Image (cartoon, rainbow, N blue to C red; front, top):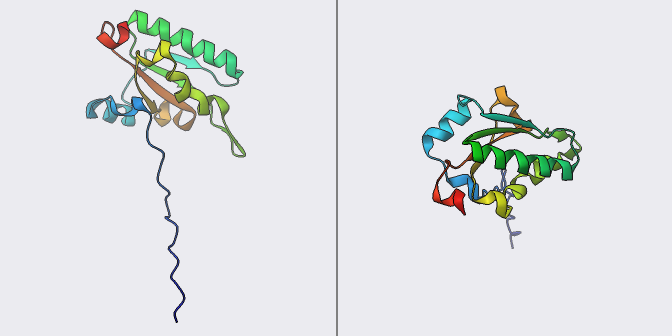
Length: 135
């Protein structure tokens, strides 16, 4: 009898589902972000911060930005090292799910190369005064 044929593993394993903030922008926003055609309203550099300090600084900055009507925040996390991914980068999406921020954040997207590429992200805040930001 012939030996059973083993299935080859997929070349590109399936990606984890995107966070809840992934599906809230229209195509125009995503095209502008992917081309680097968006100018951030604020930039926050968390690179080389300790986790607790980075989390607090991110929260403070996003709450202030939401109050003043800023929409696009560029967050520099750093890439980490080849042997160890960046811890701040790994925690960023989780931090945005915190109740104080969840209702204010519309999306999290990787930054264009001109804004830091793999070591940075855009956080898009919901419009000031929208029902979700009042919660």
